[in-house]
Image 1 (cartoon, rainbow, N blue to C red):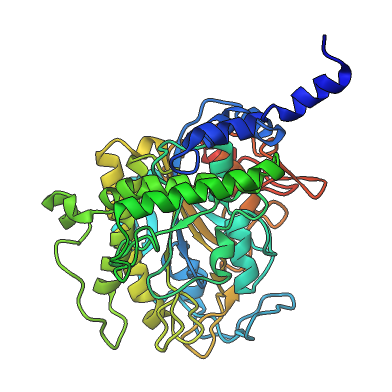
Image 2 (tube, rainbow, N blue to C red):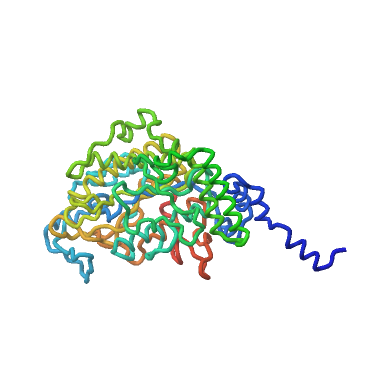
Amino acid sequence: MRTPESHRQVQNDRPSRREFLWRSGGGLGGLALSALLADNLRADDLRATSAKHRAPKCKRVIQLFMAGGASHLDLFDYKPQLVKHAGEPSQFGEPVETFQDGLGPWLAPVWPFAPHGQCGKLLGQTVAPLGAHVDDIAFVHDLVSRSGVHSQATLLQTTGFQLPGFPGAGCWLSYGLGSLNENLPTFVVMPDHRGMPSNGVKNWDAAFLPSQHGGTPVYPDAPMPIADLHAHRSGDYITPASEQDALRLLAQLNRAHAATRGGDARLDARIRSYELAARMQLAAPEALDLKAEPAHVLKLYGLDRGPQPWPKEINAEEEAFWFAQKCLAARRLLERGVRFVQVWSGNDNSFPRRNWDSHEDIRRDQGPLSTGMALGAAALLTDLKQRGMLDDTLVLFSTEFGRMPSSQGGQGRDHNPFTFTTWLCGGGIKGGITCGESDEWGYKPRDRQHPTTCYDIHATMLHLLGIDHEQLTFRHNGIDRRLTDVHGKVIAGLLA
């Protein structure tokens, strides 16, 4: 008969479930461990599961982000008053604080507008390629920001908060919905090939969520699209056998670490990251092989030629090539199970600007960028629709704020956080509509009491994915955090 002391001794000698799994796992750091741990839902996992409240209208998202502040007044939101009163002193009827005191005379749209589609949506000349899709697009012209500063306003659109330290929207989708393909990341980010946006990786970092939910940067135009996925060419001494030895050693170190830190979520996340990297070595190169596309698809995206050397002046054709390349890579990733792809445009502060922050000259800066965006986005929408993917894919156009209706330096426009444009297309969205209008100048929302916020856009996105935005939470520092903070409403007018 066992005494209490001997019973305790047996219990102490018995390996924990985690340690047993580690001992029997072997290989790539115990491949079975993270899969079984995933089945053993923690409280946070239960909260994510309970947030799924309805049948989803879509299962994946592409966010096209124009870094620097796309001008709604010159691209999407036509204002006859600006044409009528161009050159006259701007009068707002109230004190206005702008970023660089850009309160010059009223500035008319720098490109002509024309109607498109059965809905007759007016688009600026440089974004006319989107005209073929306006009957599938819902435009929102009364979006407001809480900041006119690039870093804060960008974080607000990407994370729902003005300060760093909060997960990106794609991280929340990964946390709430999980993966559709265990061999590829759930959240992929394609930065502009010229540089990072304001805040850099903070826009897609997992923050306090488990780190495996963070965005994975991918550069489809680079010789190595995913950094450090394979050994550097200088590591020619690495053989398959030595790599397996290194992985076994890593597994032993992880086992030793796990034995003294039971329930450490950071270890679980690290293990999953290592395992995903190993699986991606096979899956990612195939997914990012754009040359595998048939000739007619490459032609649709304008990729049936190679990129040319950068010209001294910004060139719309080159902008279209680089943006369309990311859009095609995004489609290939989505059809292979990636949940959320974020495509960035405009992150170069050299002169002349190759970003959307057009203080000096709207026509020079945003002309090539907007044409490149429109050509790439139009090809993406056509491709998704032809494949039947647009029905369950949400495409979201974003920027951190708009531009002022008054001029700056004669040809530029200052920041306008008071109202700007976003548009949505695809899974569950009612097309051919405008939902929310700006005033006659495009300065503020027409209905100043009930503008649209990023929280509303995020709430609507989650709703379309079958998630209640108020229920998708994660306990952090004693607070049940969520993407929409304590705000947000689903925009019923956007829903099909």
